[in-house]
Length: 105
Image: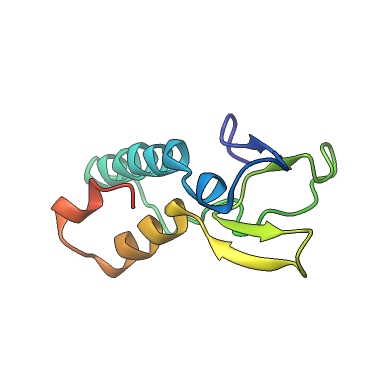
């Protein structure tokens, strides 16, 4: 789990609010820029994955924290909604233009 990248589950938050995880987008931008620099410096990087894909049960915290790039609505049939970080990560993986990588949407 990304230290500091979890959010408290807030039952009063709107769907738009919970999907707007700009802090996590900033984390990925900074972290992946550091990975790219490490590769340039000669590190043998074989892969990277985001932890975690979905909001889910965490042994130490139950369902009280959310840290996935996809929001799981526990109260409405476990419907899933990509957060801003999932959309950014998708664009990043597709190699879209650098100016789009600065966006958080």
